[in-house]
Length: 133
Image (cartoon, rainbow, N blue to C red):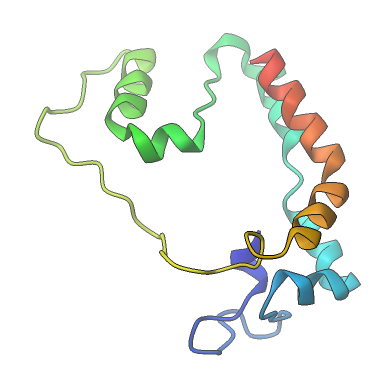
């Protein structure tokens, strides 16, 4: 969610007309922006709806698997879809990622605690999604 409410590294706002925050601490103090973030990123109930609708045809892929074993993740998806496996020489690169410091989550435990508190219902929904999947 940070991506949609922060400034670029050079200080410009990539989304004119939306709030721009330099840190999660600053975001937590802006009730209006935080409400938008909470509204935008509540997905657990939607995932449960998808699982109910598609049943065993739905597949959840953990983001970590895409990081550490992308070939395995995509080969598993291809197998489930019944399509040919990806070519052995195909390189699964990461895109749209930035390295380095982007939030104060690792350095400010109170920010992490506050976000966990605010998103507790979402954590419960995601646990239910994983239980059902």
